Image 1 (spheres, rainbow over the protein chains, first blue to last red):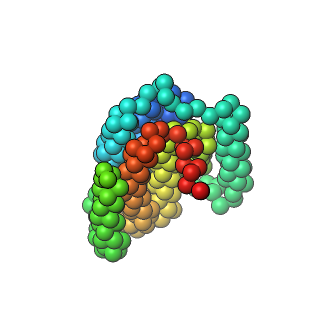
Image 2 (cartoon, each protein chain N blue to C red; image 1 turned 90 degrees about the vertical axis):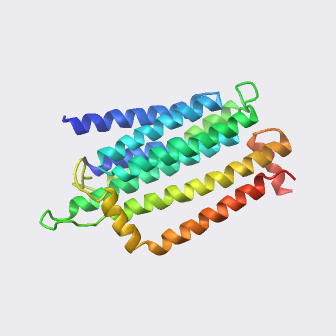
Image 3 (spheres, rainbow over the protein chains, first blue to last red; image 1 turned 120 degrees about the horizontal axis):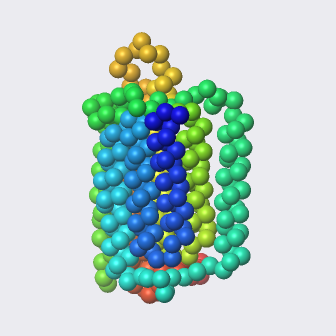
Length: 167
Length: 111
């Protein structure tokens, strides 16, 4: 068992534990903090796959911007453990069972897939994830989607302001 | 690293997100579970892009096979950021009208 495998299993365990704690914790602020932990573990996976640009963007955009937005909204609403709405026990059990069945079906599908045998993901090597190579492809092959994305951002900004306005 | 390990990890994260959407009633937690599902899909896309790069023979230098997958992750992040800003505006508006974050209040949309 080499260093890459140890790091992979450690980061996977951290990601799944933090994701479970997002569901388990009663306080919404704690859920946000556990979700930030999950995002950091996923960024570690990106670094392990040598996708350095995505690792940095994941930390800046997700753990930095989006989660701060969530925290702002939670603090604005003054949510805490007391007024947390809860589902009944049987509804929770039904949700867990249906989610588990979903996972079991997909896992059995992956185990039977003959195409995936002997395929490996290249770790700690390969330089397509660096900013230089991604930027070349982004601004040559994907210029039109990139510009459309800016229009999407503008419309989302206008929409958020219009909806958030007091009237 | 075999690709199956990455698929199992992403399936586990995605299923945790699905379970969260099904079992929680706080609308913000439901939204966070959707973000978790986005992230598991992103991780799987990056793993598949590196899988395609590993299949290219080593003689070909500077191959950009598989960079499409990582650019799709970039676009998914952009769309997720736009979606979060609009979604949180909707949640704030819902809270202002009903003084609650219970997702069952959205039932009244059907009337």
